[in-house]
Image (cartoon, rainbow, N blue to C red):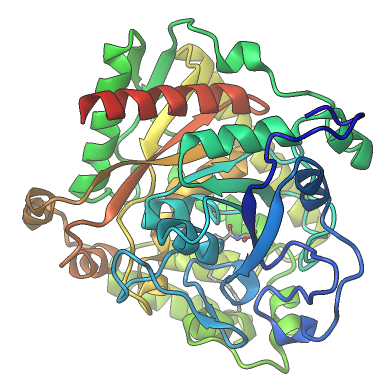
Length: 454
Ligand SMILES: CCCCCCCC/C=C\CCCCCCCC(=O)NCC(=O)O
């Protein structure tokens, strides 16, 4: 579209769905927390303004988990969203309403946010396409302000769609001068078609297992399938070792719970706490020593030190000085990853969309460690896409017989996977910050390659 003359835009006449935490004039914006109810916003989200200029028509708002810091998509205000592929399972979260609606063919294009996987987890659970851009590449102005003071690991706004064309059209419509004028904090980098359309052969890294939770067979097979397809298109495939995932998860939590959970406790103090959050909420309100002790007991009992990391880190680093040290460790982690990336001369990295397919409703907290697959790219602030590649087969389910069941997480995952045949399975594709066009290029090639195969 010509933004000066007002001629038809990239999204002319396209209906779009919007996650509940985006400001839409005249609506309240709650994140599933009643403290924000009945407080209509008077401003419009910047992305929505640009999308409207490009001809898009917002037509529905979609559900989220209470507080948006989990992937169980339910809250006491709007209730629970179910997965259209299997209604006993959830759609993931926190952009779960978006992904469910797109998978059910109620929308072709929607908008979510992602601080730990909130665009990519639901994309994977529902078999739709999603892109978490680099934080800052597109505007985040006028969103629910909950926890906006936390700046170490920030949420990114991004699209979900029923195909690659949708993700590309959105990025082309948003990366325009009108957005940089509305929000001067976004670097004025317009959509770089020359990167998206380049035919240069790439070096593509991949990993099947992050060294903490082994993905179920279907999620590993999806990565192998994707790398095979990309190899036949002339790209070089390189095995890659991801950095320490325990450190990653600890740093992520110490950053996002830097206030020791105070903002959650404050926001939920007069609210009904959603059943999916009860345990986490209890961990935040118990005396610190008791929470630590219980975390230690649970980790011994479950033979998984992640439970201890979770209980310890959700109570925050404890002081501003210690918080600054976390910021330093985050930077060191990013440097370490960059060194590995450069040593392998990577262009992009492919890995499982998640450790397992859609989880049964009510079971999310028992398998929370799966988020290590998505949180990694938030801590690194790498643009990352998620796209469907395959579905769980009977053979995949039968192969679960050889899946480890040493830890409580592994046992819970094994149990949850019974009956998963037919569920969608995505892969993730990540690149260095601000390389959204490269991520989209690889995903579009993969989509084409997969279509040619079928
Ligand atoms: C009382 C509330 C406490 C909530 C804590 C829940 C358990 C925390 C454990 C792990 C945290 C990782 C969760 C990541 C899920 C993705 C959420 C996300 O990206 N949200 C951001 C957004 O929607 O913008």
